[in-house]
Amino acid sequence: MKYFFTRDNVSLAVESGCAARRDLARREGFEISKLTCAEQVHGVDVAVVDEALVGCGALDLESRIPKSDAMITNIKGVCLMILTADCVPVLLHDKRKGVIAAIHAGWKGTAGRIVKKSIEKMAEVYGCDIRDIEAYIGPSICGRCFEVGNEVVAAIGERYVTGESENGKALLDLKYANTIQMTEMGVDLSNIKVSRECTYHDRLASWRREKCVERIGSGIWLE
Image (cartoon, rainbow, N blue to C red; front, side, top):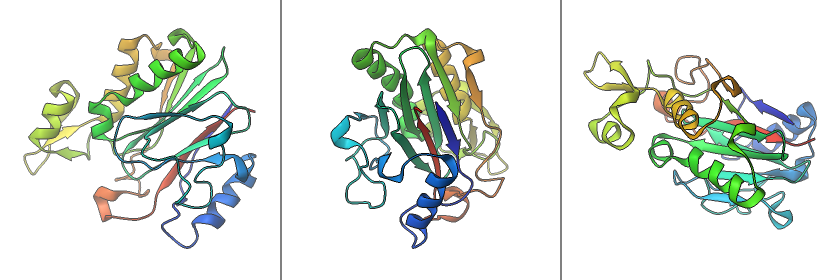
């Protein structure tokens, strides 16, 4: 298994997107024809990537897997990639069964427990055991920078509030929320690796900072 979190833009919303993805494939060592992406809509649907879906959304927006914020597969060589600009990218790997997942967990997905739904789908389709799952949480907005309103706190829960901003708004830690949701399911905390990079503070693609069209990519594949 290999995975990556890019610092550069790989969104097809900009002219350089296709070239950036081809460069990424060469650099990381996967085939661009097997890069697979979904139409992310801040929902909780999980797509099972079979042979018919391999390569969807690799170099064009039209062929993306429709309305799915998570993808799972057991097909070797298929790189599942999600795009983010503050939301939390979560990559999963069942080391025993050889199953992977790529998940887009914004606040709505976190409130809807999309990581939990993805793990449940991995168990349903491939017979995965929660004890064999490793998780990698990539760069996203951190708990010191993510200001939210009361409706977001109500949806996700006050336990993930880290404090109050200078503007009097609650500060929410989505990385922590997704980590706790996984450990409560039974994922060993030692099997969860969390990036310390903050997209807002560390000048990565950040919708909250500058309403950008750029996106960083988070991908995983089985060698």
